[in-house]
Image 1 (spheres, rainbow, N blue to C red):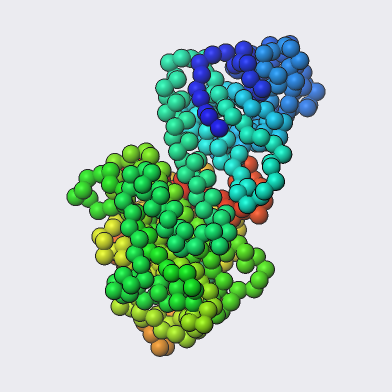
Image 2 (cartoon, rainbow, N blue to C red; image 1 turned 90 degrees about the vertical axis):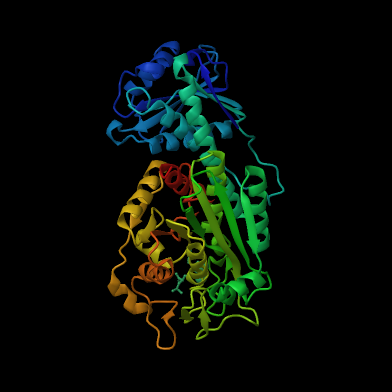
Length: 498
Ligand code: BES
Ligand code: MN
Ligand code: ZN
């Protein structure tokens, strides 16, 4: 879908549908909605008076113009209560409106700039949110469905603004929104791909392609090199699978070469069966998405490169499968991580922290700082926070706050969990330096406390996306399946560091 900014009069657009809006409780719409109401001979005011249009968030009212306007239809989108209105309301209503019109087979759509009037939102940010909500909301993953889809696609979305002087500002917003949304959809594609189409080798290939296309450097370390580097924890996880592990390194250089690069580390478990500590079969298929953190990092680097951000960023993605093959890791085995620490593996299903341990050591060896890791790490985080927000933990409060803020801007909710010293106790082993599970209580925290042993004194934030990487229901621009969570947070964080 193309998104264009046009200067003109919303009441005169020759399109399949025009989208206007209404805040809850408004009886006499002004601005663009008022103008459209007039063109329709007061139809909107009448429907409000009759109680058919209330302006509630996500409410969609279709009005056929029957020759009164050049557009065939008008869609009135409810924006909800004005005091609860945010950029995320804009993303939400645009996703709803676009999905509705796609079902009707509409090809060309025009919209007003929601929120820029009485909503009081910055025009550039509004245009960005319009673009993001539309592109994210219209996402589909039909690669493996041979049947033709019932509805076609919307070809064109026009953002209509009367004031010609605001055009370049709006275009700036559209461009930002498109980069962020398309990167997120790119991550969704990788995550939704079944594990037999997204092996560690496939993931490395995707990263190499992104690098070629967007001008990044990409190196992939093979098993032999990992051995030489002493990545015993990552190799331990990989030994139960026939698929060779890959350690993906992507570099973006846009900033001062004297400054350390921001390090983004993503868990790249292309399938997590649990290994010998095998998972129950129920919902095990979702574990094709255990590389969501890695996908988010690759997608974020793509967007950062498109933004030509003035910063240096390195992405590290340890990629492997966790399978119970004949050579697999066994409960009780002891592994040695790259920094020499020994780990007792009490549960082979706590594999994410093992591969991240080596990746964090490698990040420190490269001198990256600060570090953010993104991982579908613990079911415990899902239990604690549900599927509404991502868990954040780390060793630097100031940095965590910046990550949370980067999330807020993108509509991604993040909540901090504590990393008190006392939790370390649970990771103590009788036979090695540390063990890979801390028992049932506080599982998200003890997992992060394990990672803290490898990030050491580098400023570091860990994002546990186990509850948010996948959605079982459709919620505006979050569709069923992969959400692509964290991509926009990572990009906003990087942009804020420039
Ligand atoms: N990838 C899983 C965590 C997960 C579960 C993510 C469900 C998304 C949805 C991770 O590798 C895992 O298995 N964690 C274990 C840790 C436990 C053995 C200490 C868990 O959470 O059960
Ligand atoms: Mn696991
Ligand atoms: Zn896992």
